[in-house]
Amino acid sequence: MLARQRYLADYTVAAMARRRGRNLGLLVVYGGMVFLLASVLFYTSALKHESGLLLAEAPEIVVQRLVAGRYDLISTEHAEALAGIRGVRQVQSRLWGYHYDPAVRANYTLMVPPDRDLEPGTAVVGPALARARGAGPGDVLSFRGQDGALSAFRIDAVLPQASALASADLLLVAEADFRRLFGIPDDQYTDLALHIPNPREVQTVAEKVLEALPDSRPILRDEILRTYDAVFDWRSALVLLPLTGALLAFAILAWEKASGLSADERREIGILKAIGWETADVLQMKLWEGALVSMLAFLLGTTAAYWHVFGLSAPLLAPVMQGWSVLYPDFQLTPVVTATQLLTLFFLTVFPYLVATLMPVWRAAVSDPDEVMR
Image (cartoon, rainbow, N blue to C red; front, side, top):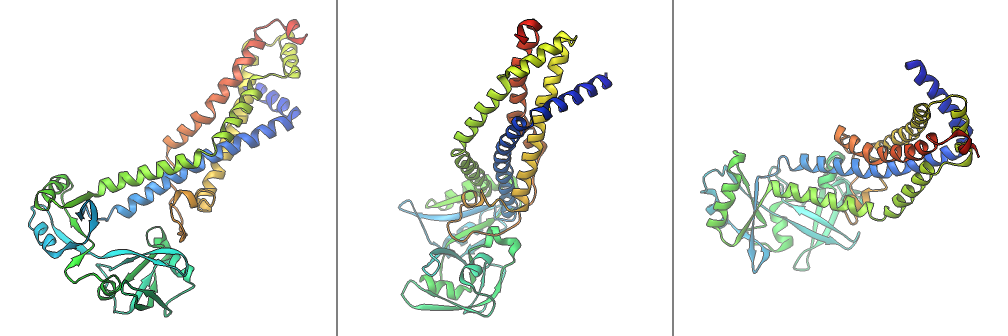
């Protein structure tokens, strides 16, 4: 049995070599389609994985204050009211916001670090921000505050490149500088972060927050994770939408190549039948041919997609998928490829081609050899 399959495989390879131009063209187009689909699949999964890692240490609940349905500052009285809720280990008052820099036409994320004491007049910047301004430790950046006055910040350090996904446009400043730049009073904060040690109490605590502060909006960490997943899924669909025409063109090409037997192929099948080949032998031979083409395309496409996403950081997809407008982060993604992804990609690309290959061959193989050769 194994010897028979080896002979069939040898004959198939020889037959494919006689039509190398047709098969190479199909292989290139087929592999390109697999590459596009696999790149989007791998990159979306990797971004979801990175977002999950980033939010793993995030607070379980973030509380914002709403005034007339709009986001507003929250006071220390709100923090004191939430500190008394059972199940809340810590209430952290946070200061953060956005500042537009006309020099690079980009928004920076300004934040007061809760675990780092900075001297007034100093700042720690993200890698993309430092690259955009051509600045480094010791340089001075100036920003115009809400009152029109300039505030100068001496760069104390640049955040590591490994954190670029979260800190690309980040600017860490002292609390006094932040309040002066945005004109925020001493008893006001951007939002409150609640740390809850028991995950099963998060939903209950969120309900108690609404009871204690009816003008607030609690945002759960799980909701943020689901939002990130939905955004990345939407952006992956946005990337695939312009490629629909190319994918449809490939489907038509693959169907035509697989289902439309040429006169030479029909004559070859007729000759094989005339010299004693069984219908099952012909079907197995064509199955070998379809399997070789589809598996080679699948391997080449997925390998190229893996290198494109995890080796080159997906330069073809990053501008759309990351969602950054100006300051694009430069970071290395952690390879995340699961068996489910590969099986899904396999059944979407390989299985339909094999089915399209066998149907016309079966019709030709069951016909009379003399009729087929004529």
